Amino acid sequence: MTAQPQQHEHVLLYGPGDEQRLQLVGTIAAMANTGGGTIHISRVEGDRQRLESAAVAGLVSGFVAPRVRGIESTLHTDGSVVIHVPESETKPHVITRDGMCADADGRQRSVFHTGQVWVRRGRENRPAGPDDLQQMVRESASQLLEHLSIGLRDPAFSLKLTDSQGIPVRLAEDEGSVPVSPNLARLYPYTTKTLGGQLGKPTNWVATAGKVLRLKESRENAYGVPAPSGRVVQWRYSERALRLLRDQLAKDPAWNPYRAL
Image 1 (cartoon, rainbow, N blue to C red):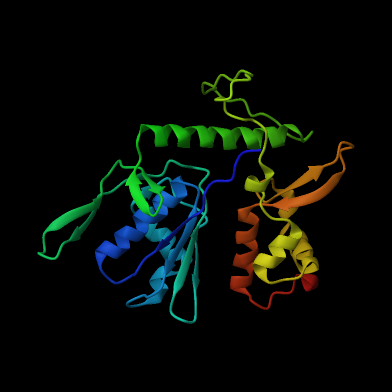
Image 2: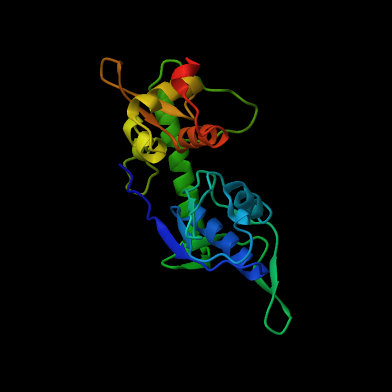
């Protein structure tokens, strides 16, 4: 099984200035490219609504492509904010626009440049080197093959033929080869019980909510782990499934899935 990536942490004081805003963008991009992580903002000057999930995702999208998905902000009653950045399946994320801010003398300087790819090294954000880029490409290819491997276990799986040129693949025992075996803990990190733990809901509530939202009908949301006989012995759920459930509760905190059956 593939080793779990390191989760990074970063502490940031967030004010209304451009520098803090750009530091946040660079840190999120670096974490998305390097295993994910958590940003702790102990003090926010100004309107904290600027740090809600949708607002942060929009800010990052103005400087980074492809879009970093799954950014989640939690605004605490003590005034602090915690932002969770998952490891991205669409990395490398590239800076698409210069991040400029004024220094103490009023002169413009760049926090990051167009075309850069940022990674996390310890507690710092740094531009990626050739080895970093190669590693990201390998990890993306590995995740693609993991999804393919899971799909091939399903009799309903099909390959779509296109006019574009494919990628040649051959089997090899070389330790440097990209693994094809799926890492279910990374692709589908939650069980029904652990989803309930994330949401503060009992297992039966999660199972019923999953039926109402039809989570099991999409491979993007859930995967049924089969026994050798083919019978599903456990359902596992993705980060996307967790976001769908959280979005439903955000729209209606009193939502009762039992009444929706």
